Image 1: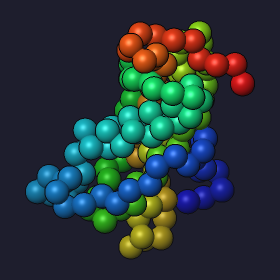
Image 2: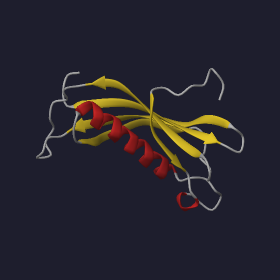
Image 3: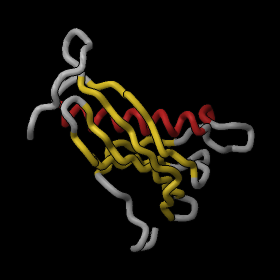
Image 4: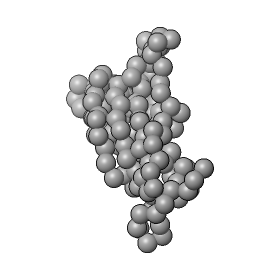
Length: 128
């Protein structure tokens, strides 16, 4: 990783890409990467909302590089906007390629989470 290429936001989730998550060529499925990003969004948004959240939308996501078996996937989240009931996060996934001792951004996207009350209805996000 060069000084010019740094993750945006806070490290929220780290996991290892395993053979069961890959196609026969050793590339990790995009859906698996997206699921890790969704988990990280849920963790960060739930902390901010101080309670339950759900994914309302994912937009502007593009895969730039593949994730390979053995890469450590690090997901960074940055809260871009807090609305009345929603939280918009910029989420970046970076692969640490230990065999080359480098870290590269593989994808990024915008995730919109909604805070829910005990009955599963949208609730106001508390003011910080």
